Amino acid sequence: MINVDVVIIGAGGSGLMCGATAGNLGRNVVIIDHAKKIGEKIRISGGGKCNFTNIYASPENYISQNPHFIKSALTQYSQWDFIKMVEKNNIEYYEKTLGQLFCKNSSQQIIDMLVKNCQDNSVKINMQTNIISVEKTSNGFIVNTDKGQYSCKSLVISCGGLSIPKIGATGLGYKIAKQFDIPVIPTSPALVPLTFNPEFLSAYKQLSGVSLNATVSTHNISFKEGLLFTHRGLSGPSILQISSYLKSGTHININLCPTINIEEFLLSEKQKGNNKKISSIIKNHMPQKLTEVIIKNLEFNSKLTETSNKDINLVATHINNWKVTPTDSEGYRTAEVTLGGVDTNYLSSKTMETKTIKGLYFIGEVVDVTGWLGGYNFQWAWSSGFVAGLNT
Image (cartoon, rainbow, N blue to C red):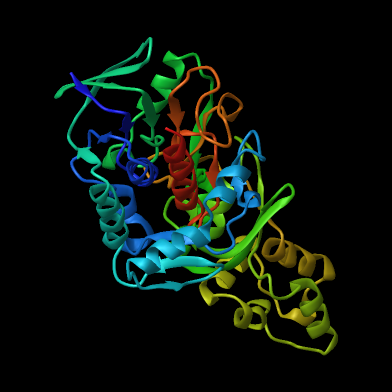
């Protein structure tokens, strides 16, 4: 039996941040993970550049059954605090778009920084170690692994959600929550490409690889970012963002040309006597291939002066307010994060400790807090890990 103050299950972003923070306060900490490599999700993120935070991070950029839950952690440890750490470690970074900050060189720099912070505070990191069971004792917990037993006063669950199983995602965190009678909000893939029925794919298969800026909306939420046609359906930042808000059978509205009102534009051109075909007139405002496919699918391409106002409205609606209903998503295989998770009503927003089991904490993606695309989920990892580390 190895006796420590804190056992952290999961060597991802939140676990490493928690370990370094607790270790800095003099706690005897061990981090356990079944994976071979530390922080693999950090390494592959942002195309290997790691979108490590967002300068606009605020509670409004997160989805949770309790939208107020994240406020305390973000206040205690904000994006500016993490940026200071990055700068202190001489990691060069840049802003890409919409406040997204990326490493200039490699995401490995973020992993190395977090690991060094742990090592500097005598935190042990044991990889390729499988959890067999977790038990509650009168004064803490016993964690049984395939490489020995650990006794601890505080147990932190930071083993992530179900997204990207090929790098080691499992449902262990949810299993432990349920073991201690802590509810789990039903989970689903989030920030994930959308798939469509064969009829849709047949109509738009020629567009695979075509990208453009678009506004994608559902109900009262919308995102104006890149959209990408794929051989399975639709992807790109705007689609990934809206995927977190979709329920089964919900339609989305897509504005394929958000810069102009196509109906007003075409009516104006018609009044001027523009005698070109519609596809020729609007191709300057959209990818030509997309324009051609839309017109082809509508089965007409007459000259503008010969086109009725009703048909002009039909073209415009298909471009400025295209309504589509996904059949599904690509699932956890390609989802960047998991929607849902450990019920925040059972956690302290100030410490991340469970309200019913003293010394038990849940942090990071395993919790019912899901950020937008653009560095928000990593910021949640840093913030939740930090506040738990302060209080273990």
